[in-house]
Length: 379
Figure 1 (cartoon, rainbow, N blue to C red):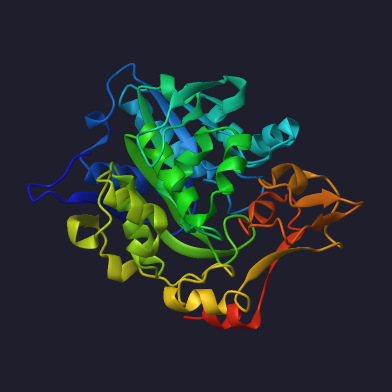
Figure 2 (cartoon, rainbow, N blue to C red):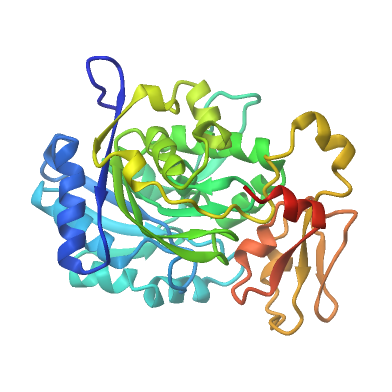
């Protein structure tokens, strides 16, 4: 992690109005050049993993193929040997995951650039000890990530129902298998965020390039509204990048659990006063994003116990959209969903982790907010 003489992390912030390939190429190159150029990170022959954000074949939820093409170009010019990979959180359907890679345009972006794109599970996972935290445990991690000389994380700028924001730190969650992700969701927001930081610190990317040209606000990371932000961000400190990105969309960096936890552990800088932004000024690029319907940080913690039964966002099945595919049942970490014949939710078991909402391919799991939660979500 390169820092200024004053110990500040550096984050490049560059305008990019649209996804025209020439504009993307210029913006991605400019962002990396502001950090000192790709050759300071990559040596000739380095195996470089471009860890994209792949969720499903839907506009605005994945890293844009054009951004990936631009990154491949930069890696090749520095002498690196890139591959493109991820595994979406489609627990039980490998065919759907492979189809997502194709229909998202990421497979074509790689193929047209002369490199390989694949799902992590096709190359296997390896069990490794997690970083020292509250208690020792092990994780299965993509062999491709462990074998890479360089990892470039390529997240999408989006909100998230459980963590408020998903960026550089959370993007590395994709290196663990879907079933592990399901289990980690059962730990609640704080425990889940701790696990995300564990994974990020274990498989820490050399560089992060964020697609913030068109992001997602509100009901992210899969079912929100597309929002034009017009930015590309890059940094070798993903925690600092998340701080800047969350600030741009109107959130306080330290209210993002993963940013706070990672900064507290010394993994990166989360305090804007310790971050030097190169290129555009943050205040010139600010654009307010709607918060997820489930987010309740506006309520003081001392009130939460009293108001909890009146303040909620609970998953509900939209029967008109549901096709009974079973993804929600398979993905629930606590077994609170059963097909009978449509999904039914056991409210006593449900921990409101919103896994079902995130992974439903048809948007049939909606978040039903109480009237108080709707008020709390307003800014």
